[in-house]
Length: 247
Image 1 (cartoon, rainbow, N blue to C red):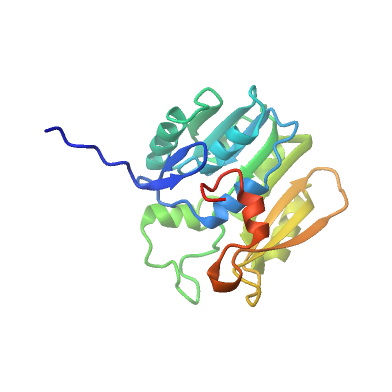
Image 2 (image 1 turned 135 degrees about the vertical axis):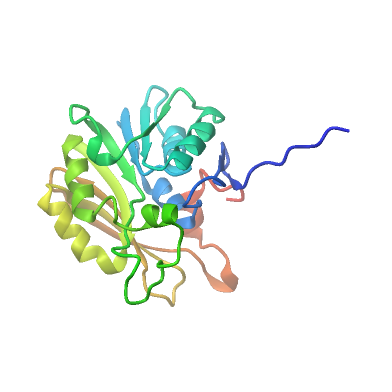
C-alpha cells in the first residue's frame, strides 16, 4: 500500500494554499490584515519586500488585474524556495516572480505602482525585555532590523517608486512617530492609518499604513479583531472576507 503524502504546514485561503514550514516567519493574523488592507486598483507592477512564504504576493495576485506582475523578494534561501513553490502551485504562477535579493540591491531603473511589505521592525533582539534574544538566526533576520532599518526601508522604496505609487506596510503602534518621520524624510506621506487592537478593552498594538508620494487627506481608522466570547468582529470578517475560508 502506498503512503499518502502529508500536506506541509501552512494556511489555506479561499483560493490558494500557502506552505510555511521552511520559512523563519510563519503566516500570521497581521500579514492577513495587511494583505486584505491593500488596494491593488490601477496597480500593474507590484513589489513584495521580504516575501517569506509569499503570502502577500499571492494575496496581491488574487486581488489584482489579470495582466498585473508581482515581484517578490527575500534574502533567505529557504523563504525563496518556499515562495517559489507556493507561487508555482497557485492559480497565478505567471503573475508572481520570486527573486533572492536585498531591497538595497534592486534595479533602481524599475519603478513599481505598488509596494507592500511586512518589514523587520524590532530594533534589536537584545532589547531591555530580550523578547527576541533567543530566536533562531533566520527568524532574527526576518524580525529585527539587522538587514533593513526603518530609514533604509523608506529610502529604498522611494527610489523604486513614482509619483503615483502606493506603499503599504505595518509597524508596532509604539513606533508610529518614528515611522511617520522616517517616511516623510524620504518623501512618503501617510494616506491611510489603521490601528489594530486584539479586543475592545486592549490598546492598539499594530499600525497598518498606506503611504503615497503626494500629500492627501489622511484617513484614520481602528480595527478590533475579537469581540465577546473571543469571536471575530464583523469588521474583521468584512476586511478579510476574500481570504479566510470561514468568512
